[in-house]
Length: 175
Image (tube, rainbow, N blue to C red; front, side, top):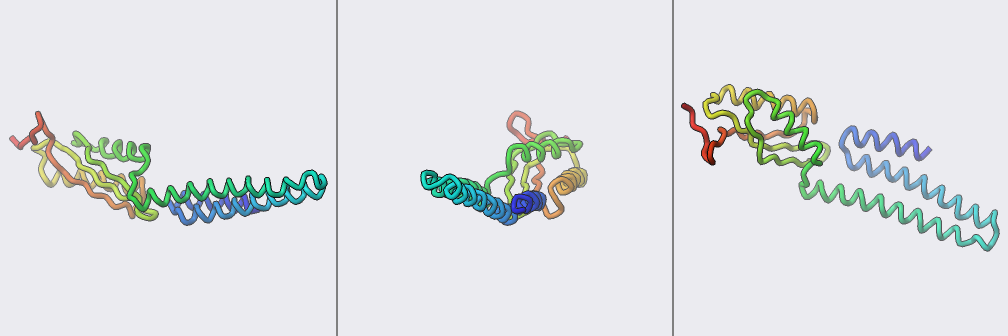
């Protein structure tokens, strides 16, 4: 029963990008493992006799190691979130692909991503031809923002800095 609660809760935590819910899921799993470890340790010692009394502390050590490993993983996720660690490469590559798919975009650089609770923050610089009007460039940036919010959620914070493309290290001026 506790394993089912783990599966359900971890799925919900990932769906809503909530580390607190995922941590609660691991609580369910540690309960299940503790019960199984206790059953094996005590049951083995009772059924197999005094020579197997070592099963109880051995099971406790194994269950403790698993709980410590799970806790370490949760601590590292939380530390990464608190220190504004970037999103995984796969998600950053997806963000770049969405932005690069927009008409008129020549280059994306200075991409910065992070999690803010269960939301995402994305900041980037988008280079377009220097003769693109401000109005058109803004429309393209708005379209990129719309696509990113469709993919990562309406609460996603997006900051797009527009600039003209560079040729030989200098910004291209309108002709």
